[in-house]
Every structure is written in C-alpha cells, then in structure tokens.
Length: 493
Figure 1 (cartoon, rainbow, N blue to C red):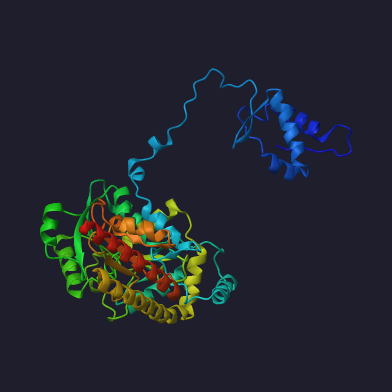
Figure 2: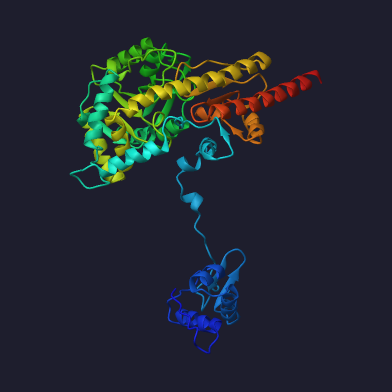
C-alpha cells in the first residue's frame, strides 16, 4: 500500500490519506478483508504523527469501509463477500498427521532452555563452551572465506565438501576404520542422518531393535518413518545382549540401532564383548547395524574402545558420528560411513530434500582439522568435561549419602543417569527446581510409552560452567532434602 503526503497542500494530511485509501479500496487494490498497517507503523513510514493515522482510519471506519478489532487492527470491509455466509475456518489440527499430533514436546522445551541466560541447565546435550574462543573462531572463518577455491562460494557437492571428506577418512583411520571419501556422506546432524537412512530403507511396519531408555529424537524419527520399535534394556555395560537372538528370531527386525559410546541418556558404554556379539548376530541373520558413536571421543577413565564399525569386515554397519559434542555449540557437522551404494542414495536424497549442505560449518570443520586445532581441542574437551563430571559427581555422592539417591559414575560422555530416592517423582522435582532457575530432563521422556522413568533424571555436565554446576547442584540437594522430609512426615502421619 503506497501512500503519499503533500505537506504543501491545503488539504489536511489525514484527509489526503483517507482519500487515497478510499480510492485503493474502490479500484480493488485493497481487497475485502485486507489488514491495514498499524497506526504506529504507518505513521513511522510516512513521518507523520500517529494521531493523523488514527483520524484517517476513523474517517473510513465511519463510512463503513473499514472495521477495527481489538488487538488485531483495521481491515477493509466493503461490499463484503462474507455477509450472510457461514464462515468455516480450516481445522489445522485435523490436517496434521497423527504421528506429529502425538509428539511429546517437553524434551524439546527443556532442551531449548539451555540457551536462556538466567537458567542453569543440566538438560542440554551440547558441547562445552570453554575450549573455543571467539577471536580464534573469527580467524579460522576468515581463512576459510579467503582461501582460493575453484568451485563457487557457499555451495558444496551433495556428498559434502571433498576436502572435508578426505580429512574425515583420515580421522576415521585413527578410530580403526579404513574408508574412502566416496564412502562418506556429510550431513547436519545424526538426527538428520538417521531420518535419511530410515527413509531410504525402512518400510511401514518394519521393526527396529534398539536399546531403552533411548533419546526421544531417535524413537520419534523411527515412528515418523513408519517403523515399530522393539526395545531391549541396558545396564552399565550398554545394551543387554543375552536374549537378542530369540528376539531377532521372533521379531525379524530390519535394523539394529545402538548408541555404542556413553549413550544418551544413561552414559553406558557398550563393552567390547557386546560389540562383538552384536556383529556376530548381524552376520548370522544378515541384519544391518546402525551405530551411533557420537560420544566416543569423550573418554576419561578408559582407553578408546574399537567401534563396531572398526570390527566390521563384512560391511554390515552403517556408522554415524557427529562433531556436536566436540565443536563449539551451534556448529553441527555429522557424517555417515557406509557401503558406497548407500552413500550414493543418501547423496541423492540430499539433492531432493535440501539441495545444498550448509557451507559454513563444513569450512570451519575443515580449517580446524587442517590446522590440527581440532585434535588439540579434543584433549581440552576431555579435561574440561572430566573436571565437570567430577564436580557434579561429588555433589551426587553427598546427596546419595543423605537421601538414598543412586547413580553410575560415567567413564566418559556428557550424561549422568540418576535414580531418585524412593517416593520422589522427577517431574515434580523438576517443577520445583525450575522455580530456582535450574533444569534437567526427567526420565520418562526416554521411554517409548512414557510409563517408566518417573524415578529417573538425566543430568548433563558439558554445557554448564563449573560455577553453574556448583550452584545448580546445591539447589538440587536442597530441594531433594525438602522432598525427602515431606515423605517422612507423610509416612509418620
């Protein structure tokens, strides 16, 4: 809507504006139901006082050309096609697929609170903030922008930047996996990688064997792909493999999904014996394994353990790794290592789904790997996260002695899986703790049917600072003590 103001004319400005709007309505330029700019916005655009716009709009409203609604503003109303018509608004909720309607958003909302300035978040699952400095990031990004490139800026091939894929193949050789750049597909995150893999090979109703408790992102991705999740319990050594063969023979799963290293949420590390057992079953029953190995570089009390992929002579494992825990927060680069045919198909999906992979994260990752900074930062990440884990565990030990809380000290990764004292519900505990400016993720969100885990919580120690951990754990200790006292009082009554 273009309006002009003639400050030299004898006609008052509000009448100039009302006449121009009137003409736009009559000639059909402003259609019935059109929302006019707010009084303040139009006044700012034309450089006039807001009261001038109020008078112009009022003039047209009195003529029946406009209607006004509280909190909405002004709309054109002239020979309304809606008069006498029954309005039927779109039922948006009915149009959304049931799979999305049933989404549990509490995990997402709590995770997003990690970024609020006034919140101490034990709910995030992102990298420590300390190792990467803003001036260094700016310098590395500047080098990436200035480096002479033969191909166009800001675009990469569908598989990802070729130089970065070469560096990743070298990185994988350090993890015992010999692979070529052509067997690597770069993506933005492991959630996206899993989504693409399942979309490529899963049919509605196919079963997937996975551990439980499990990241909500994983079981929602499987559900949206039309898969049926068959869950297996875990202990401190990861997925329990004792009865897997019987489950495979009865359920005939299409895939086995395993979070092998310091898994989300339990922090469990799959032992070498269980890794071999999974691979043996994969070979025997010809079942692919999807190995999520995101946490494998953050080991503290153990040496690096070979991935399932590194033992896979038969090429049965699709390997996923994300740098999200070992790069600055917000920079997400992930990759898949698989049979070349699978990589070619994933690349084709990239061309259809997203057309171009994000250039900036890839170039940052490449520069950090080229300069060797990334590998030096890995040591920093391990040291920083080890210290943070020890601080959080020291407080948990004190709370345990007072209340009966229990947990297993993780040997790496970024999560601690806590069993609360008898009678304390993690959701009620979270409600109280949030009032104190502290969040965590309650245990029930990690179970498919949400019927378990009420006595569990997942704590993350990578993202909060050491000082935030101390302050947050003091508050957690205080509130658990309060809950415990209330339980004792009720028992006496």
